[in-house]
Image (cartoon, rainbow over all chains, first blue to last red; front, side, top):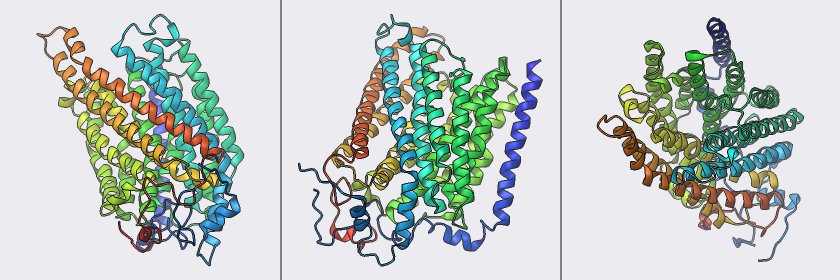
Length: 72
Length: 495
């Protein structure tokens, strides 16, 4: 009978996936991923001194020092 | 036009212009250098499958207009070409390009060079062999007979193995991270590393039959979106929208709430594909409830992305990456809300088994995911190739071909599908009447598909140019238009 075997295997995998996800959540709480400090600062993590907040970022070349913006 | 070359040293010099402390830049360059070859390999092979899959898709679409076209050649019949299209764009293009983006993002977000890069090469090779083997098998008529799982099991095994090597490198990099907090994009990436191998393995066990097989089929097909394709797309959107604009995400709290609500509700959704089928009613009802509950994470994402962009819409005029990614993000909101409504029994009575579903699927995979992946490639490649995109006008052509093509496609399929469903439900009408009524919409589908294919060809051409650092050298970003000077120098924070 394939049905019971299939059901058992699916349940086993779902339990494993759920348990691992729950473990991830517990780890996140314990490592203070949801602390007020981290939540307040987390959004700024993708910025740094070189690519600061307030500066459009989709450029690899900053403005050349001679002020020219001509395409070569 | 004269062609100039730029050395890596010149690139670094330009990039650090005016900066006294170069440590952040050096870290970024090191990280980018650690991923250059594997990311290019993922992107290049992904784009190859995109072209092949688009051709197959267009051929399948034209067969609705000209049913006898290519009908005399067995491997070009609709029953073979259509699954070839689906599987090459999902497991070839979207998966491989998505993997390339995930590798690059993981390095950036963990602030460390990618670990175990050998595993990425092994992954890309196994993955491509798996897709190639699967496609050849489909063309010769070997098909498992389940949507999204048409590839023969050995091909699925190779893809699964490739994913495990890929996940090994990503998780190894995560373990070496130099950051304390995990940015919301990393949550989506890590979740997909955990969930997708389990999903794909369970689905390919081959121990199901009858109704169980149908349930497993749609549990898998919908969850492939839930645990791999959607997390990849959202990880990209959560990074590129705030990064390109230069403004933190509107509500970081909402971002994490959205992730955990996504983890809680999305994996229950698949069985709504079997509304009216021979499954226990409670099972379908649970799936419908979970589908409607998806409003929570979807609105969290929508509010976040759109309120981050608001006030900066003028940047869409300049930035290729932002234009593609914002289009993708808006499509995510639209397709998700559409999907929740589509799961309702009353709606399914009309839309189910019609072209409406095809329009919905394309809005998700193309309007949302592919557009974000295009934007990601436009952002990432100049950084790892140390060369800007040579022809911004071709990027603009790509955008408009893709955006207009998918818009035409989705609108035509949804309207045509709804008409088709209404007519099929009318017992006074012969079935052929519902077929004839869809003809104009099916032509619109083919036109939309042609436009998307043209966009892909343009995209692939520029990709080849940037790999070889060919075409005119560029010392300013490849924007659609030259921005005002005050924007370049950062004097204007909102434009």
